[in-house]
Length: 419
Image 1 (cartoon, rainbow, N blue to C red):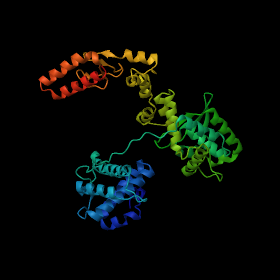
Image 2: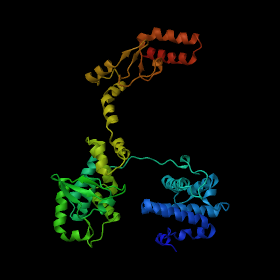
Image 3: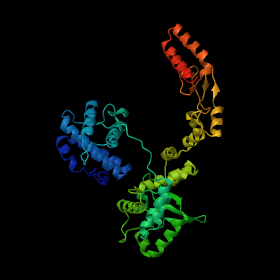
Image 4: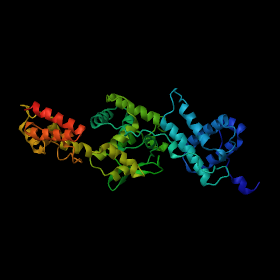
């Protein structure tokens, strides 16, 4: 064996789920193992593990339903289409069908697998990628679930009243910095530093492979100093905050902390990530620039932050508030004795005369139509226009314009009823 060969790492270890595939289609298993070993170099372990699961499921489907396929080069649309149907009929552990997001993840990882085989020009690559964007199910895109201002205030008040200092510190760190739970659990013992006279927190490399500094609220500085004073042996663990036995925090423990505080605040279940959404929304609502919010949250792509701008955008609310009184004026009875003088003036201001009546549409609500006034919901008329309305009705009848004739018959009847 050469020195080069001896230095090569072991191939990617396939789990027991691959045993039937190794027996029935060893070529598929060998290609999958080679592929997983390649992406293991560049992707996160969790992503590689998910790709392993998806590929073993796909290959198992091929073994069970497509005996004619011995290599990935032979995978075509019929195989993909039958796998899609199998995913759609598959049940989750709870007995419910797989969610659209889960199916999309499966197909996306499978598409990436075939795309890389083609790009890398492996002999096992098919002639073309057999999965397209049309195969991906549409996934709902809900807005992030943030606490509103009153709920957030109650939550922080409950956190401030906590007797457990670890719980208090962890919860307030999440709420006041927008950190992810994994980032909180990974804070190093030297994460706090002084920069230009201000306290900053170094958030470790996280989901997006970047670390960052975030400014510390004075309240957090106070809590961190008290924690360090009462836990002098904390530095020996290498972590800023740990469990009582010195073991690192985990996301389950942090989630329990958040929910305990939420229950004390009377809010029911609150997911830790909601605190991140809440901070981002509050910051944008109060004028913080979107670029600064992106930096605070550790977003590499500004599009990730724009979802909070969509959530917190005040433009629609502000513009609606500006015209709401004018819209209300449309629905007030002109003979209502309780109508205020201001509202009466407002209605009169937006009551513009037309050939057969008036238009009551506010100027802010632009009209894009030129000749449908009589059929518009903003059109109003009265008995003084009866001669012209009758002439329009008779003209329509003489020219067999039946829809127009019915329109003017209705207008004549309404005007005559108010005569």
